[in-house]
Image (cartoon, rainbow, N blue to C red; front, side):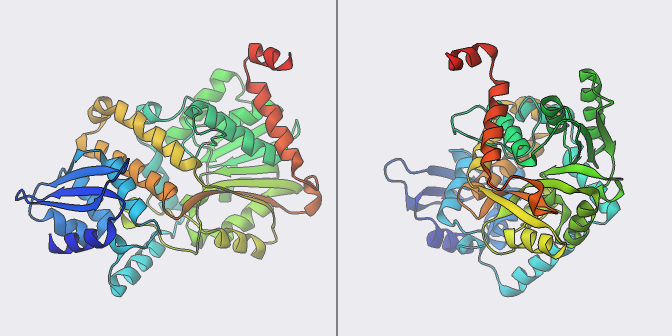
Length: 421
């Protein structure tokens, strides 16, 4: 407990953290003050403190999953937010302080995990997305958007924010009826179906998780659009082109930096000369870094969250024009908070589907991710890429105007009439 005690004494200033050791000894760190966070945790065995101190994020996550760290006041989300607020810099702060050799080893290991050859890419996708359909139904919106929503107002519902995200992206694609669109990493098909419905375009959606593609095909068939919106279990490297537009949402994070040259080269080959590509992904606000070991092990094997410099630099090397860049700073924090609450509301069913350890793992993942996007160094990037500078209008007003038009289309008829009056 000595090492963890020293780390917490140096770290916790905002809010109050109380730790009850396995022998009943109580230690308090920080001071809650008016309205500050107040969290109490109990360590259930002698080795729990050392496990956490040796590698804080992995140790804390595994201790919570295994019931060795029990939150008695507050919850795991409050604990993650308290710690992150006190050590806001990603890879920084006393809780992340480790020896130089270990830090270098972590970075080398993270780099090797990013080498996603074809078979590994498929295995990683199946690990992440081939969980039971019911799990995703329990915490995602009705359209199963498993990526950052776009909150025009933090008070909006998750469903509204995800619909607004689709409009926000579609406006940047500058679509026209009859175009051919490639959706790389199409998820459960919501964006592809939305683009077809709102623009009368043909869409090919591809992904590497069999159950996702099966579900997408079911949706297209139910909507009677299977001839116009097609979904394939396929790697983007094998797709025949050309396409007028390419969109990818939540894909870049799964590629790993060694795959960036091939990705930007192949997508440029697939895009028509006057085409547009739009990418939405998680990102780092600062310099390139490394994905933490817990996330790589339990949630997104092979994943890496890129810095803007890595995306722009690689695009430039392959002849792309980076024509628009937007940083969504708090939107994923709001999204993850809602996913966390919906997960908690479905606790009994998730435990029946899997077990208690899985439920705690999912809680820890969502809570830790929210903390990173709320207080840490993570944001979401939306980038628009062109092959030729005249592929879109000179000023970006077209995006704002088109997004407003799309939002109006989704309003109930009675609200549209009221607004016109």
